[in-house]
Amino acid sequence: MGFEWIPWAIAAVSLVVGEYRARSAANRTRRDDDANPWGEVTHHSGDLYLIRNVSTRDVMVTGARKIRHETAAVLEDRVTFPFRVNSGDQLDFLMRERYGLSSTPDIAVEWYFIDDKKTRPRENRRILPAKRS
Image (cartoon, rainbow, N blue to C red; front, side, top):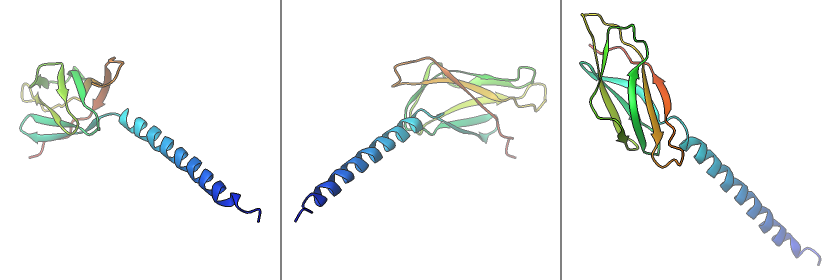
């Protein structure tokens, strides 16, 4: 008598908590989706390097450049920009040594998310690993 409202109160609290958790998960996913999509650069073989799109979204790469221009290495793109890199795919490029000098610069990749309304390119810098023997 008088306690009939308890199941209704429990149900209401459960709904509010469930809604809060759903919104928190959506915000966390949105934050993760906006994160930098590039993994670490890996050396494949010879002068070939790879960088993977580790995000859940497709990106459009508008360019790549070496950062330290005083180095002797030459960056050679293997694709024509703009170039689409789907989620899980990779972008590959060649970093060739000149004059027998082995100084590898870091690179900067300019990109934007394809499904983003604001297509202002972002830039991310990556350190090239040493070549494997």
